[in-house]
Amino acid sequence: MKKHNLAFIDLETTGFDPDKHEIIEIGVIIARQVPMAGRGPKLEVLEEFELKVKPEHLETADQEALRLNSYNDADWLFAVSLEQALKLVQEKTLDTIMVGQNVNFDWKFLEAGFKKTGLQNKMHYHKLDLIPMVFAKTYNDDRLKYYNLQGLAEYYGIKNDKAHTALADIKTTFAIYKKVLEIE
Image (cartoon, rainbow, N blue to C red; front, side, top):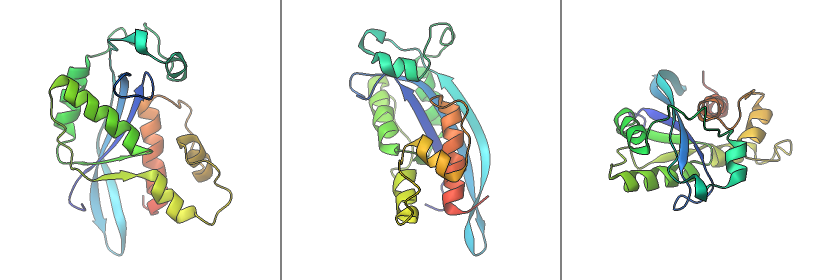
């Protein structure tokens, strides 16, 4: 696992069910793990990108999810298709380890998207999730009440002015990950 690049990935979706709802935004930071003597790795950002994905079935969308993610037709006017988005994700995340906050949620949507488009998810099968990492480190600290991204950001003193946008959320996740591992 130490030799793999890390793919910090956050998705915004039209709801909670990957069989019914769609990915509408993808934020990715690819980082190389640079070994540091006697401590965790330094993370060298190789690339970051954000994609707006054109939804095909807004009629099945959860209206609250659309509101939360600030979906509007104008901002998604030049969005790419799911296939175009996942081709880029597939190319950029080859053999990386996915990292996220509640990574299972995003992984399920990615898997559903790859299946729908006939593309293959070429990430390494291991995944890293912030929630159990933070839980293990802060178990006895009663100041942390919520393990959602907002709660973790507040606990670690990280500002996220554009919450529920994929790139802002993954930048926040990346910053929290570094704080949890006490690396720069």
